[in-house]
Amino acid sequence: MFAKGAELGCHVLFSGGATSRGDGGVGFMRNLLARNNEDGKRMTSICHTRPSGAMFGLPQAQPFRNPEWTALMQLPSLTDRLAALRDPATGAALIKSSRESGFTADPAKLHPMGTGDIPDYDLQRANSLQQIADATGTDPVEVYVERLIESEGRELWNYWAFGGALENQWASTTTISKQAIPTT
Image (cartoon, rainbow, N blue to C red; front, side):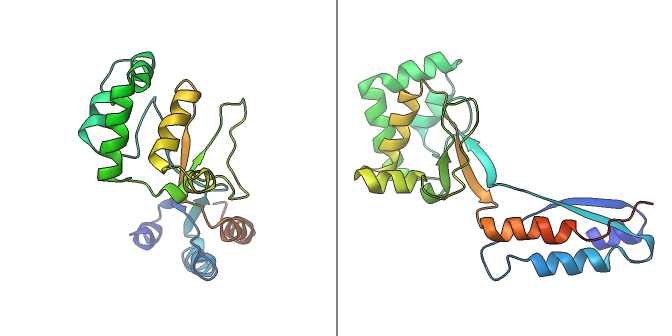
């Protein structure tokens, strides 16, 4: 589809990302762009420069799909959700149902961003939800709920769906950006 668009004279822009296998696809992307930028065609890829994919937290999406979390997230405000989460019976029901249903996002790829003025992207890969749970001997669901309460519902969790292979990601950004990009 991208190649066809470039052949038709469209300036094709798409989002790319590196994986953890081999060179992360950097060579493939370099060759794809080189082939599709011949003879005045224009194809460009943007690349994540840090891990990203989705943000989870009390203000928005949750990494669980079960009736208890659905009911919580239907409450009209963050204040209402936090009050419900602090209720021992509600908290216990959320934890129980989430243990049974499991995560929709791998806890090893969920990284807390903190509550400071500048997000902590955990580029050292030392602070995933799974790592926190393992270090404290606690279930990841419990850690997630506890941190939502401790942060007053302000902490977001960055799901590393893209860009989790940091060295490949940075290599792709550097390598591919060095190619000549057509200006016409």
